[in-house]
Length: 176
Image 1 (tube, rainbow, N blue to C red):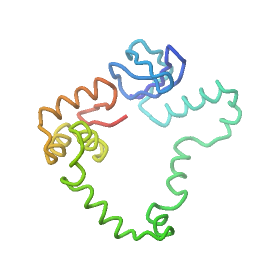
Image 2: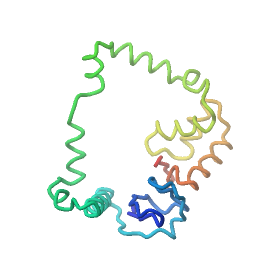
Image 3: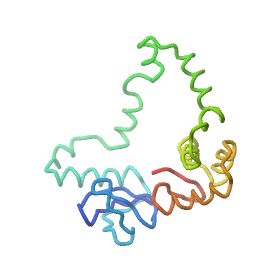
Image 4: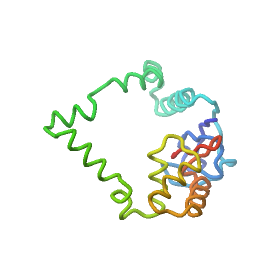
């Protein structure tokens, strides 16, 4: 479930997934309990929620007519995926060997390369970033491969969820 909520301090509109204990305003950085926020719209469809928030922001700024002429978020997303050049094409046009770049990336992301100077928290966040909607056990396994204790990962996931940095839906985590 996604919700469009308004900040009680600055009236900024934000999309929140599920019902976290607290959420932080991206504009004024005020942290507020979710229950105290004004919920403007809720839906299971992220595109519908994005449309409502976009329309409300356009109307607030006096651009409601211009917004009505813009395609839906779903349509814009599909066109954005096809727009521009791929990262590989860009690198090749700049004269960079993409095979050498891929090999360097592989070396940098091996367990010893990517975690040599990373904190345990950074490793947990990296696992959440790298994995697509991972379960708790998948994050534990990924972090354990880098030497992070299982208990630390479980505690970190609980704290990150409580602080609104990640959400957990049906046992799967997602960075916000």
